[in-house]
Image 1 (cartoon, rainbow, N blue to C red):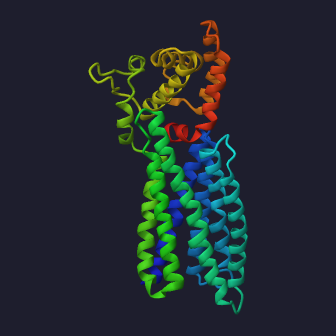
Image 2 (cartoon, rainbow, N blue to C red; image 1 turned 90 degrees about the vertical axis):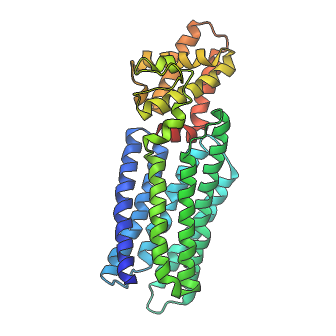
Image 3 (cartoon, rainbow, N blue to C red; image 1 turned 30 degrees about the vertical axis):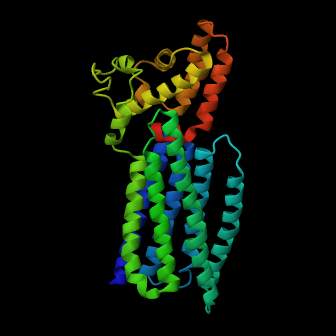
Length: 354
């Protein structure tokens, strides 16, 4: 029974991760978020691990049972590390990136080598024990904990930047990775410390895998309900949003708007706040000016299709021209600061615009 459940676990994980990773990667390409593409690639590599485990166990292939699946399993963390660097540390050089990369590289090579040695005719138990320790106790918890910390830190930071609103997608991102760590620890307990826990581990792994999938899904494909809190805070541009849909006069919230329009309007408000602090004009005026620049250069009703690349083009183009025409003395500094925000706060823009 446990063996059948294990096969189903491998198969379902393989199918789900293949579909999820492919859709995520394609969406990242379409929306020009190359950082998220690496996360999709990490999921696809992890799907390869489950696919290999399923077929090797189904046909009882012993020659490459441990070494072959170990390769995509460990290597799936590599694009994940690239995602973290591009998303949470974009435009920044931090020692933590180098430290984790060095630790990962050394342990990844060691783990893959141990997996290959475990496939030898008379493997030493030492190989299996240390492969489990490296995978379940060191490498995956190290990288996943890094993701958890980054998610929580960015949530707190955005709460301050957005006047009390921190996108909950950072929290879902963190919770999902916590389930990944829990599954790995139980894998170590059942595989090394107490094999009698194996049947419980299989069930526990299914629960953890499903939970991880759910939280990753709502992180990257959030339902519209998650934007209700955000919608209630789009007030500065309320009148302008009314051009593409009715606005409630009492609450200042928008009805009939797509989630993309609402979140992108909040992004424009954020950049309006940055611009306001630099040129000394009101938040409302600066936010409205950016919106007018977007519609002038990209066309009306294009906010819902706005990408980071579009925003970068508008900032360096129409917005720059408008600031110069208005005679703003520090227009060049303002444009440079806005472009810097596009780079250094990519994590915020990713969770709001993707």
